[in-house]
Length: 540
Image (cartoon, rainbow, N blue to C red; front, side, top):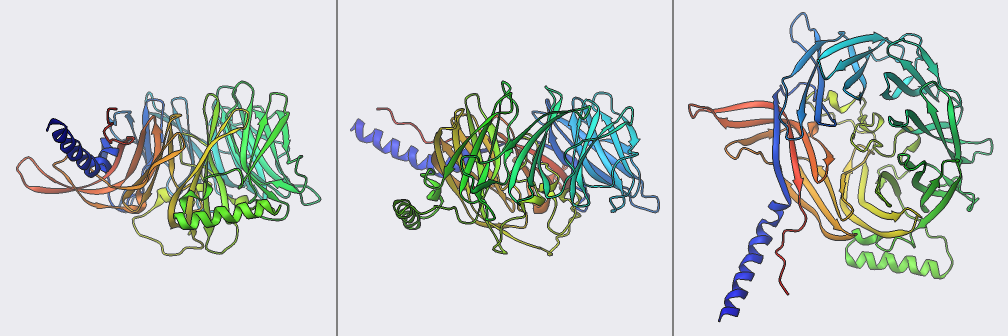
């Protein structure tokens, strides 16, 4: 009798947890709000060592529309400061931004022409003092990245269809032009600063006179001296070419470069390569093809998956080349102590052609900032932080995202596991990174936005536990209700540990002290905790 009672109780608990499991997998734990208006520009949110900083520009209405830079900071519990304001030049627009130590740097440009005057505003986050300097003697280039390190701004852009980099000393106003970058048939794929070593890496894709493409990794100090150059080629596969890659930080004087490769004059769809680069600039390549990815087609329904896998097996048996259809693009490489987690997006363009890799970063290369400038340019032009509250139906292209692939490799390049998650053929006007990853060496959470819904997937040691679980946005205060959410304003990124950060604009319905219903328009930040499976463990 007691055994039967225990079975009934266990069954009840199982049903209870199945019903509430989805709710428990995502928790909205803390929230910060500041007043806004629906048509205002969105705040740009960036993580800091202590929490976050959010900033935007705002023009006062009326005949004298003085433009202001507004910002506020929070700690990791989302306790926020007041909103600080500083006047900035009218008719200038925000072009770039970066954080370095306790300073926020924002770059403004006059008008839309690349020849317009540019100003760097430096905001001390410790004492709320702002200074400004006009950029003189800098190139008129179409700016694509802006970084600051040791008080020097690194400006990267295109001029006459060639890449160019300059270093501008904010204090002395001296300008250095980096040599060896400005050349034909070249594009910069990644610009990575290393504050610890006080150097920056430039990853360049270029073609030689025989139209063969290769990657060059160049490292410079802030005086403009080239410290090293490594030309990465598929020497073991002369009929192949390496098109792009994601570069990891320097660890123990070593770096890793990971990305897709393919046949010359064709799309880079043979698989992935991994280049292990030592302190002397020597490197070794490892290659991984579709035949190595045992779970590549796991995103498909079982019948389709089995047909695709059998087709690959037959091709291998007949000695045919096995290619990956559509576009596999490396978005992120997370460096562990002894391994590397690679996140790739697998998608198809509506034009049926390959995505314009030479015109965009393939991923957001700063682990703490989904803010790569070219990744956030809207298809209709402009930047999403200038979203005015009105949608634009003009779309040049669409991207159908089919799957997110994850590959774990050890330090020697041996594959530990691989798996894919279905993205349910979601379409997007942006070719940028689709989702955000949290990985602790055991649990891999993958989260993305779909309108005003969150979608969450979990892998444990490479095994899919659940995928695309849907969660409604929620408030921390149970006595309040979300009246409206501006979908286009929403931004999601992994923050730290198992926490994500969601931001955007909402209208909130609440009861005031007298019990009368009221509404407020706010820009919000919500801290989201993700949890693994909450099913109760059965004792053996």
